[in-house]
Image (cartoon, rainbow, N blue to C red; front, side, top):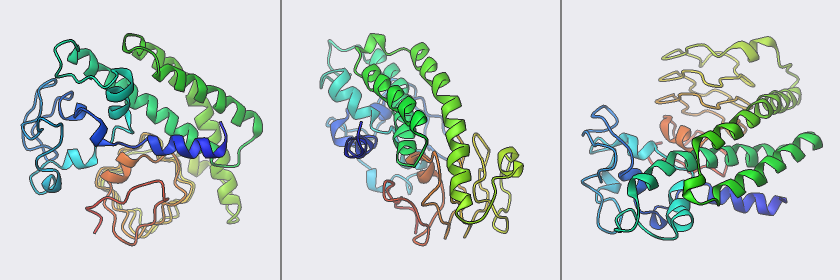
Amino acid sequence: MEGQDLKALRLTLSPDCSKCFGLCCVAFHYLESEDFPIDKPAGKPCSHLTDTYSCQIHSELRERGFKGCTVYDCLGAGQFISQVTFENRSWHESDVDGTHMFAVLPIMTQTHELLLYIVDLLSHPIPSRDAESLQSLLKELLAFRELPSEQLTGTTLMAFRQRARPMFIQLSQFIRASGLRQSGISLTKRHEADRSDLIGRNMSKKDVRGMCYRGALLIGANFRGQDLSYVDFMGADVRDMDVRGAEMTNSLFLTQMQVNAMNGDHHTKIAPVYKRPSHWR
């Protein structure tokens, strides 16, 4: 897949609620918390979901306590399931198994997450052999998501994830080392080992460029004004992480959901592929 095709694919890996049957508003189980003001069982439509699958309070979600809704991002899985997998047939129709449709959503979302990571990696100058391996995996994932819903299994997805993981780790290290080298910095063991619990920690005075925070707990951590270039955020929990004034243009393995979960402002720099959250004031 060439550059223009990759850019076109990247654009599809973001939600278009107008082409989705409100799957995230029905499929998931929500517990009353600081992110949701109500309990909602899985498979039951949210009380604010309209008959046309839009949200009655979309512009007031945060003010009404639905913070989690403003953070969630299906990476385009919702509309793909609605329009392609189930051929524009809603869970509301009598001949559609809604429970099965909802079960496909997390599988498709994780598939799109893998696609997103691969497309983003291919945007960097990486060794040709690695690029070929990623292209091969990309084609297989694209073929997988086109399968009938009954064949979209978690077992197959797990096999893809296991194949992708060592490539992602290796290329993360390669890209971070290359990026830091341009600034005269070496990728030391410190950058590889720092994956500890940083909940609420003040990191605003540390040099964190090129850090590997894969799977780290960064909830409420203070990275205000930090240069987060070439930081690996894969799977990191970044809820309420303070990135006001931070430089994030070259951060790695960053998803829109993670961006939505952070607290930034108009000084925070992010790559053009991300949408600036409305709460970043």
